[in-house]
Image (cartoon, rainbow, N blue to C red; front, side, top):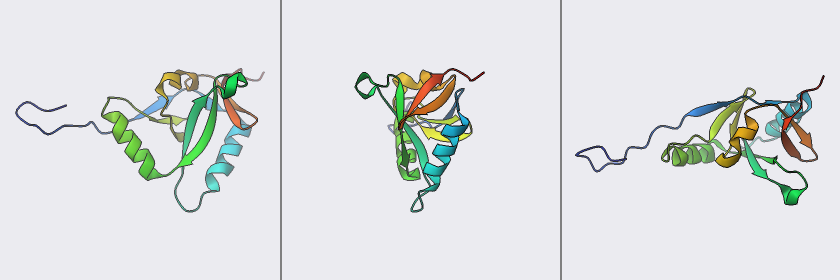
Length: 124
């Protein structure tokens, strides 16, 4: 947005949101091993939504992205007034598919095969 009397566009600094979901202990262990397997860059967990052809509705794949990509996307989305970086159960995550973010804001995330299923019921 341009300030009055100034043609320079002001883009807000990216923020970090907070999500209320959490990972099962097994999912957290698997994610930790995945992230620690990267040695050429400091990875950030990226969660990407799809329904995998209807087999796993509401499921997420995980990727590791570099801080350069995270920063670029965070700045791009902040220009639209949107957040794509979140803290989810103590882990920084990049979630570029905003239409599905509410699925990560409650319940437990557990793996089904290679995909995280959001909103699983709590054990007990």
